[in-house]
Image 1 (tube, one colour):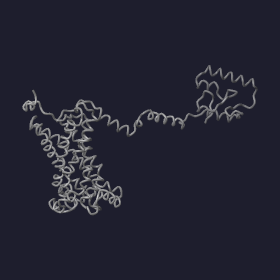
Image 2 (spheres, rainbow, N blue to C red; image 1 turned 180 degrees about the horizontal axis):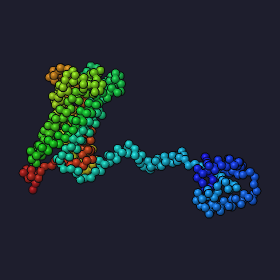
Image 3 (tube, rainbow, N blue to C red; image 1 turned 60 degrees about the vertical axis):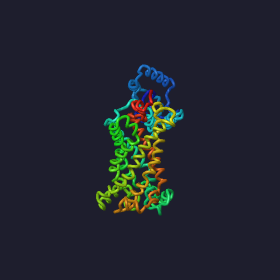
Image 4 (cartoon, helix red, strand yellow; image 1 turned 135 degrees about the horizontal axis):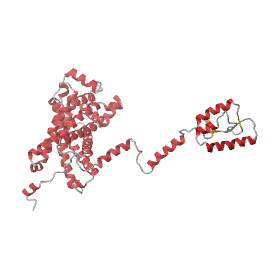
Length: 438
């Protein structure tokens, strides 16, 4: 609250207020007015008339101040002026505007985290149909590898708790008798944070594996297809998928092996190490470089059949879904419909992947836990029934994981507008040879 002359800003009001006090002005009955001790009514009216005329003659603030300064004017009329401030009402008004924008039918507030996520997903679904690069170019392979990093790194890290329980169930079935028991024992001994053990080597290792797996798969599939020719590529397409995926996984497992060894050691040996920074130097000091690659052969045994099933089953399932289930060709399906088909085909492929690769997965888990053991020794000790421990947990984990991997990978292709060839069809030349055309 401040005191000001009519028509004057607050800074002038403060100075005049001090001058008024020094000259002995006293407050009148009206709290907004100050006036000199009793003066004639005629004198006061004369001043007010003169001041009004001065205001009209001298419209600017500075000229009014020069005209009506405290040293020559006989009387002053002062008024309380409210300082402008950001009141709670104004803030409430802004909030009401934001709330109104949501209430009118919006699902989220503008600029929120949900807003950005849905905008990104909308960009995936509404991309232009034009390809951003040539099929089989260097940019194509690079972006496919990037899609592999996201699909494998994110999904494997997300299921670390289930993977931890699965590994402990394989190496110590007497203590961890089931999935539920495994979770309860782990939480009781290590707390909830104990379920996240091994997340760092999982993320790093499987990101590198995804880069090589998906990137090299595209490379080998195109390479082998060029060697076979168009007709043989169609006739032997399942064998083509199997050969390309096996070749890609061979290199992917070499990239994965060191981090996989660290992950299993952290998850299956309580007290050995809690982080990757503790585990890797300790393993190297105890066993040397061999500690990180002694599991690469059983890793090939586990991952190569898994990847062969993953890619071949997925490719053929997509082909069957569009042929027998989806009522229209893929070219007429929307982006969201195509991604839904991708997810369903990925889950079906994941179930078969889990069954095919589980025995080798059990051997890898035990081998990385123990020192000095070989794959043959572990396989003999586990026996025909022991290698299937934890299969149900692995089916749930791998089925969901594989479906999400294919969904993310295909979404990356859609987002970057990479070429996505339709399901294979019999070439016209082959149709003529087989007498299928007139």
